[in-house]
Image 1 (cartoon, one colour):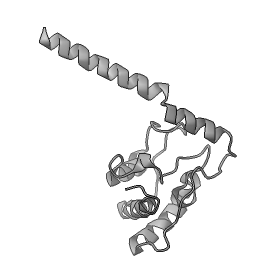
Image 2 (image 1 turned 180 degrees about the vertical axis):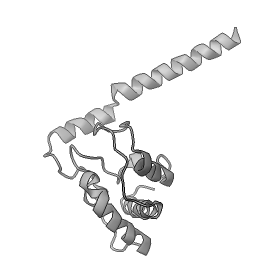
Image 3 (image 1 turned 135 degrees about the horizontal axis):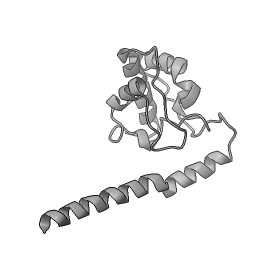
Length: 147
């Protein structure tokens, strides 16, 4: 009896999670409507850039600008219709650890927070490049109150 109750509860929980993820949260709907009124490629968020970056972040910024900015925008502000902002609470370290950036570059990412489509794996970046990019993004996030 208890075993069947536990299984039923687990199935209900998984079903509720699936419905939530695929029905779109109110936050996602608001984001989608805001993006619809913008030009394709336009910056999605305002980003305060710190006056100084660490040496590692400066190196990461160069790699970011060469590979990531095309979709994720200058200073990780996102680009409408192209890619989400990385300076956003969704990407705070407690939700997307540094290793998530490495895995995203290596394996790509199935769309799950935003409606930009899947991110393909990125070629030509070493683990050290991604570590620098992550450092750059984290310093931008901290400058914008995301920790």
